[in-house]
Length: 156
Image (cartoon, rainbow, N blue to C red; front, top):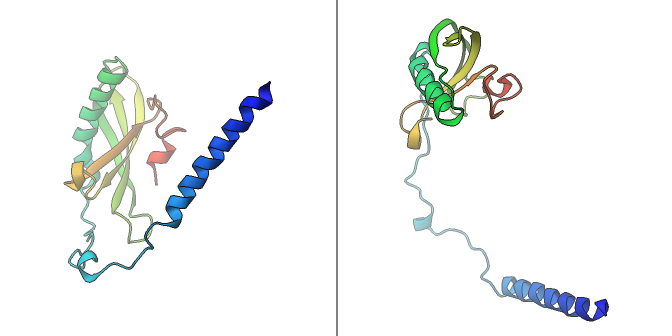
């Protein structure tokens, strides 16, 4: 009895695959772009390597950290102070990549614990590529494991 129902299903599946392959066979062939489709007037990105110093991103990190903790984790943790701010790398890869400045700092949190913050400042990394963007991670508080283990993915 089971064999009566499996054969029509296999036949329908084979017919569907045959129709899809038939549509691909009768489609248009790929052609090279004509001169109006080449976008020859677009010059591409030109990165200058002008990235803000490490201290410039601290206020952004503080506000984004407070917003993340209160919105997603129902926590009232805030960053109260920074210390030992240092650059760890600048454009660590080849020069054709988007310029980034990697930094680390110690942060005092409102619960009295000292934690490390690893962050990068990215040229044209802001919303819709306007302004500089900041990616950051507070060691021990990466609760969604975006940069785990121990914020290693936030470093160069």
